[in-house]
Image 1 (cartoon, helix red, strand yellow):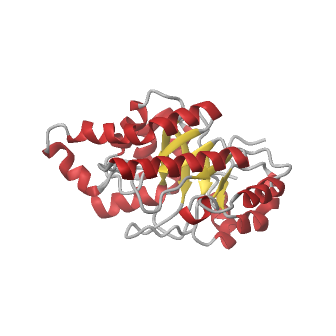
Image 2 (cartoon, helix red, strand yellow; image 1 turned 45 degrees about the vertical axis):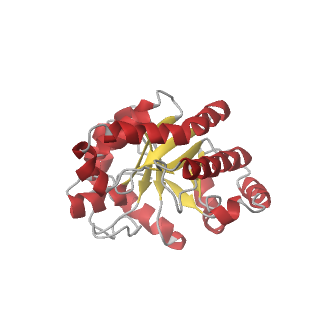
Image 3 (cartoon, one colour; image 1 turned 90 degrees about the horizontal axis):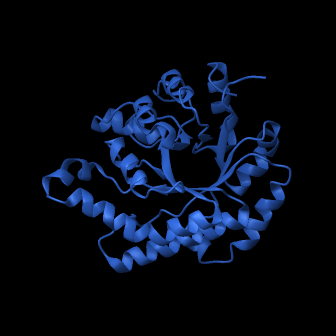
Length: 272
């Protein structure tokens, strides 16, 4: 037996088919990435969900879903836009129920512009949080009722405390924190944000989900671990200090070579 964390993966139906034996080998956590686009959610997605359930027969790892995110933010000023966002995220939770997912990834609203401007206008920070609550109130209630956790993923975030405070503001176990390592490293190199391990330290036990992907800090590469410049030992040392067990999800652009990224972290003695 080992106390090293077990890696999971973010995969489409095609990727799950390719890596099914690897997923079942250690009952790895899985994040499904087939059910988040508007075209899919407004179409007949249930046959896809049924194929996923059949393919995952025998899989006992935790299952999550990347929620809808294209074309919107969760802090819109426009009530009609907020209604559309609310409907999309409720559709995402419906898909979660269909595939047995207990976690859904939602994108953070915070931008680099926000970091420079929120405190320049009295009340702007509080108003942004209020708009997110107006958008997500019914979504959080639905998540609570079906036992699904919403995890807020950093995108442009420069100050991780903002996203952590936003999640905590709901006062609900159904709203927690996600960390994307590549997004954090991009923000560190390009905008002066903290390094990746600091994100872990600040989130603490609220951190329930991690996208593992590498980058050079210039753009959102989604390279395999080892192909960029993230300092993986420091990140995993921070993760080891957590009492909980966040889902560690390899989210790489080339899913066909997913196991090469996993092998790199294994060779470093950090995970398996």
